[in-house]
Each structure stands twice: as C-alpha cells, then as structure tokens.
Image (cartoon, rainbow, N blue to C red; front, side, top):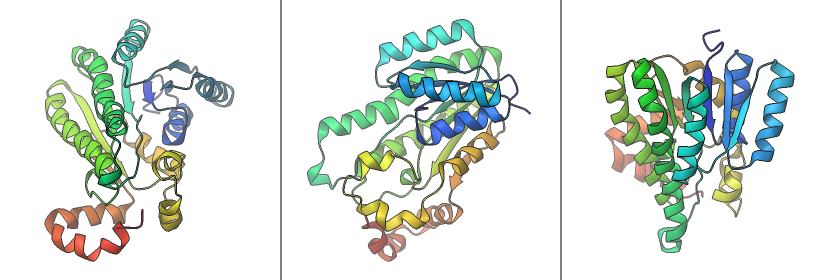
Length: 261
C-alpha cells in the first residue's frame, strides 16, 4: 500500500482515464484530489469514492488553461495538503486536415494540453523540490511519437508534452522527484466525441481501443516508482520504436492505416 495516505492530484478527473485513476488511487489507500471544469461531475465521483472506499476525496473546479484559476486552486491546496503526486491528465484533441484547422481551436489545444500542463507542474514542482520527493506524471500519447494525418495540431501538442517531460525528468532527478510520461493509444472514452465527430476513426479502430480501467491501473502501478514511460498498447510502442529507426518505411507501409481517421 505504497499510496496509503498519499495525496494525488488528478487534472481532467471528471471522466475517462482521469476518473478511473481516481478510483484506482482510492482503492490503494491514496487520497485523490480531483480537478476538472465540471464541478457537478467531480462531486458525484468524490461521493462514490468516499462511500465505496471510505477514503476522503477533495475536488475543485479548474480550467487548466486559465492561469489565474491554476494559481488560486493550487495555492489553496498547498496551504492545506502535502501533494505527493500530480497527474497531468487534462487535455483534448480535434482531428482535422491542415486546410480545415481552426487556429483558435489550435490555440486552445496548446493552452490546455501544453501550457496548462506546464502551469500545473510549476505550482507543485517547487513544493516537491523543497521536500525532495514527489512524482509528476504527464499523460501524453502515442501521437506524440508517431504523427498521423488529421492529427497535426494534436500530435504537435503531445510532442511538446514529451519534450517538456524529458527535460523535466533530468532536472527533477537532482531533487529526488520522479517524472513519468504516459503514452496510450486510442482509449474507449468520450475523447472522441470531440476529436472525431464523424465517428469514422472510432469505427475503424474500435477493436484495438484500450479500456480506461486498464490504462488507469498501469498508471497507478507506476506511481512513486522511477518509471520513465508507460507505453500502451505494447505493439504500438514497438511500432513507435521502429518508426524512430525507419520513419520513411513506416510511413509508406502504414499509410493506409494512418488515413483511417
């Protein structure tokens, strides 16, 4: 029960893998702190956690793209609890060809997926530096390793998350802080109600989609361990490694599959 009594902040905790991570943390004795825009959904999840696991659960409404909200929420939290783990899970994607990209939408993706993640990290990082312990877990994506058609902006945000995470890991190691990147493939969540309004991508990859409960378990397994990355599914991780070595070959051979968005 290495998580017993540990405070675990989870952004984007109102649904999907964020919600499942909260349940898994509570199951193992950790104390989830839920952050997302929908306070109503968070209240329901917190009530379920308290009734099911007899674990206290704190929640606050937060839009990670709003710097003032990030400052205020984390200042309140840090004044009352000792944050041990931060899971930067908040994010969204929209799949479009480049000629159809809406720049305001693209900016919002970077504000949430990248700048929001960095803002939340900065708020807990100095606290963790002082106590010389802690764990920051950034949810990126396999799209951050292999960009595919119609995901140019989304993939760019996840490439940025991986770049930030890799640099932070080296800096944080000097203070005993663990930093982990989580790179899942497609997951059965409501992510695709926004990302894929046509439903074509989900239809084409449905049989390969990961269960959010499985992803959450793997993420929680990595908590408070020096795990560099969590890559799911395994075959997609192998594909990304091959892509790093032979990008032209993979792009040519995988073109038909990549266009299934």
